[in-house]
Length: 272
Image (cartoon, rainbow, N blue to C red; front, side, top):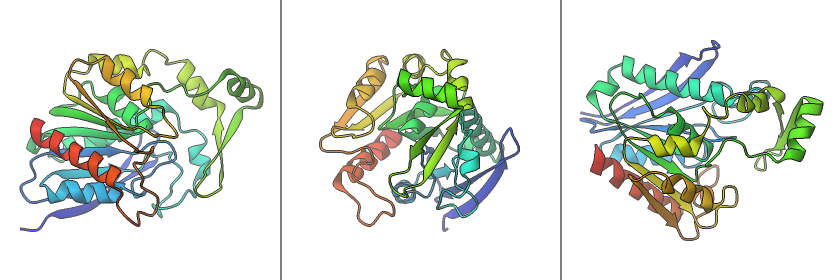
């Protein structure tokens, strides 16, 4: 019996579309919810390939686009920067929970144990959202940030004064504006967005994977996350970059990415 690949769309709490893809192999033994990070999307670089590897081992995979990640219905380019401008952490967490609710509503949470796999900011979101997920068996972070606040005081002062800051997408060259609402959301929810505390109170196994040469998130972030959880396993992949050597589109599969994926699969198989 062949597996099933399904595109789905659910509404965010704001009524915006959250678009996703779920791949379910025959007799799936688990379900991994894959969470992209900042300036990420479900079809970026390694996400489809990782899903393929999970399915090949009999594990279902769900990847999705946050409602305000800036990628529209095309699914492969940032053509909704108006949405990206107000993409707060609160909205991202609500989107993730909405997707998990959708999977539970269709029975996936009953049929398969659930795992969360988040890359970069998605790793932080996985930790922050893990409490209360029914049938959750484990969390895996790749290149995760250990705190939502990544901005220095100079940037914050400019942000407050002008109402926005601009970040550059190095791949596309696009100037991507972030409104003051993003900063205000963090400042009003510091305790709720405490990633390290969420890791400390996580009551399922945790696998923390990071590259030794991560150019975006220092490996010390991984040590802070893993160091606060007695059930955590920390793996530092020598030579690994923030994306474990992967680019978009994925032309070749780097060794570092193969290692991260293989360890993730073994973790799921061990704890399902």
